[in-house]
Image (cartoon, rainbow, N blue to C red):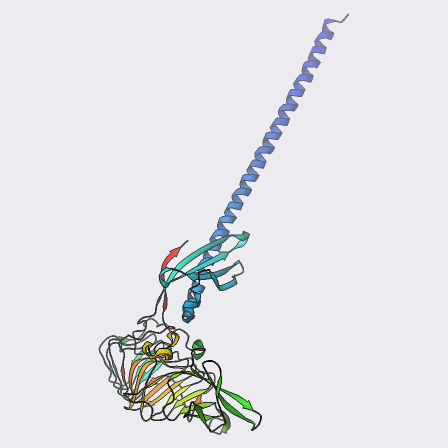
Length: 454
């Protein structure tokens, strides 16, 4: 028989065992709850961190896309001549995948939009594969974009007494403008650099004069932009039979129509007004260097009308054209263009001239990948746009309607045209230059943003 004290001890031990199990369970549950809370906090922190990283990456992608859009706009502006080629129904790549600052990359695509516009889409990709795209609708403004009768990409000097007339009869230099003569200028004479009138200068300017003005945009000037528009292509090729370089002339279908030895005349359908001179070189004791005379084609009388691409120098020296019968031509020179004619009337083809007219070379008279030199007189009458990649120099008193544009890129070597060299962009003498802002071109214009899409 159990004693009372034995029963109490037993009950006490059983109760103790029961409470021990409850405490263990409570402790376990508390640990689980704390662990869960910790894991939840860690998960929340990780999610927040990832969200923060994603937001940062998305912002990076946006800024990269903006940089890509600026790159695309600059590229489009520099290749404005290809506007129609970019106007395709399906998007084409304008700028392929390009690395950006080590944090991502971008691409730019372009396609046609309504109304003759272009839709450019730039996509930026940043860390964590974050991407953002922005799009801009561009229209082409290729009307009177210059507002100048003479635009120089760098410095310009004006001497003598030239007259610049017309509603766009102004002068601008993206470098310094120096006037030492007495020009009469219908609108403005200004510069992005300095505007200087020397002690001997007495200009008459109807509009603004001064320096520190915004630069005017000049799209790249090179004859090769218009390659393929020519009616006649002047080239040279080594002839093993007489060990000289012959002049080879192709027509627009790339048929050889003339093969001329040095010193001979180029026969184009019975017309022999082009004289060919092969390259040569000699040592100049003045310069202490060899002087090279490039392949040269010289027009000594009126050649056939058309667009000429000259892979060398083009010189116009003969009595060519009359008011009733002007020479209708566009001269594209991979070298330089020199005009010394005692009498010349010349204009580019217009739409009424049938197959002579090409929209790509609209209103272009002379385009030189190097220099343009005009030694003029009152019997020279020009109409159109003259542009040069390097320097443009005009002397004498020619009569010109249109405008001049010189990119004024300094040559890495002295360029010789006959016995002359052009070292700076200048107007001397008494040229009569008139421009009313009515000559458009397919390669000089602005890509104007119309709307931004995100």
